[in-house]
Structure formats: C-alpha cells, structure tokens
Length: 319
Image (tube, rainbow, N blue to C red; front, side):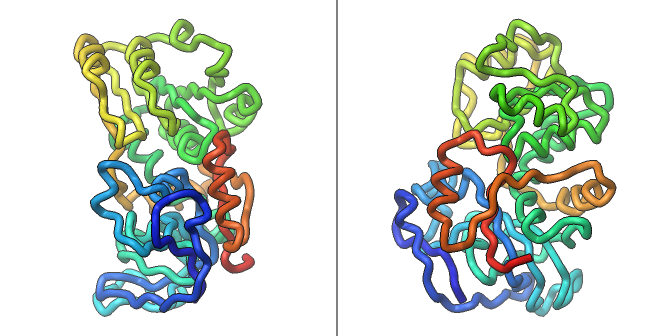
C-alpha cells in the first residue's frame, strides 16, 4: 500500500511517499481502507520530533496522521461492534502509525460509525479536533446551559467545533479570531466575535464561567489575561498540554478559586455523540482545502503558516 512515512524528524521534506506492507489488525483492532485523513498541527509537531510528553511514545519509522475516515476492511477476532463494510471515522493509534496511508489499523474503541450526512472527506476533519474540543468544553469545562464561555483561537479546527458544541449545550459563546474570520464565527453560532488583535478583550469581558484556549500559541501573558476575566470559581482549559501553567498563572487562579486544566490524551466516547449532533444539524465541519496524498508537504506548510479556517484534509480515495 502507499503511505507517507518518516525515517527522521524535521521539515516537510522528511515525509516520503512509499510502498509499505498493509497492516494487520490485532484482536481488538479494525483494519480500515482510508478515504481521507485530516491534517492537524500536532502532525507537524510530531514530524518535527514532538515535545517532552509525546517524544517517549514516538518510534521511527512512522506513518503520520490521526484523523481519518474510511471503510472497515477487516475486524479483529475480539471485535463485535463493527463488521466489514462499515463506514467509520476516528483516531488511529495516536501517536503511533496513523492514517496518511491507503490503510490503517485502530483500536475498535477509537472509531465510530461515520455521520451519514457527511462525505468521507468531511468526516476526516472531525475526530482529533472534535474530541479535543469536546474534552475542553464538556469534560474539563463542564459547560452548562446559560454559562458564558470564551473560546480563544475560535476559527481553527478545534475552536470552530468548540463553538458549536458549546452552543448546542446551551452556552453563551464568545469567540476570538483575526478580523477576517469574525463573520465566520457568527455563522458558526457565536453570540459575540472579538478581533483579538485590535480589541482589548481582557478589558471588555468579565465574569466568564469557562475559557477554552484552542489556539496553538503558547503564551503565558495571555493566560494571565484569561484569569483576569474569569469569574470567581471559573474554569480555564488550555489545549497546549506541553505548556504547563506557570507559577504566576497558578497563583492568579488560586486567588480566584478557579480551576486550570490542560487537555490531555483523547477519549473516544464523544465520537458517537458528535455523530448524532452532526446528523441533527447541530455540528458541522469546515474544510478549508483538500490535498492529494502526494501533496502532504504543501498541506503541512499551509498548516504551519497558521490562520487556517477549519481543517485541511488529505484525500486518499475520491469520495
């Protein structure tokens, strides 16, 4: 099968398209014929060698890609929840061999039936970003109807889904983005859209129940500003697991009796819940651009350049 493999860490040119053996599913795994694979900023980070948390789990050579949609080709002996021919989407073996390939294997628990009203290309843009958004807003953020939530970096893959999840849960949603994406945030359901470059949101906002930082930027000064606009006892959730809270941020949180969380490794139960929301029209994914597998380097360079609206996707098989 064709796959994008890396034998060393580095710039986009370390990714090589090659023929490799088709993987075989273990007893608790499924083999999926890949139709599309999402491209995430974490893919670029792992291509470069990961961070202190991920590095011990990375083994070369490695197939990148942990957002995928396709059709089950084979099921392991212990798998009873799926059968050959099922259309699924999910997260294959993060951070092991992934879905930049014609086939991938995944734990049966890490995939779910694909939403019926999405193409494979659309569905591939959801799993990793969607479960991250769910963890941030629902699991750690404990969002409730009537809560005010601030989503920072709301136009990206994670943030754009977080807006919709929070809105579906009955929250009042405030999103930050650059000026050209403010209308996009409103289209997604944000009650307020703030240009983080020109509007001093830390002076405009107050008494926020939940803040979810979905931006890939690691910035301690911004975290201090987040705490300033939290209500007493509020919750701050950041998506940068490799960037722990500094002592001054911890002190500021403690002074407000607020909680600070970091989104960790994913759980997969939300894949089914998100599929239901998608089929009910409460959640949609925005695909910014689709690349063929051979243009994976271009996809990575665009992702690393920043300010992608929604998601980038690699198309392995035409939908």
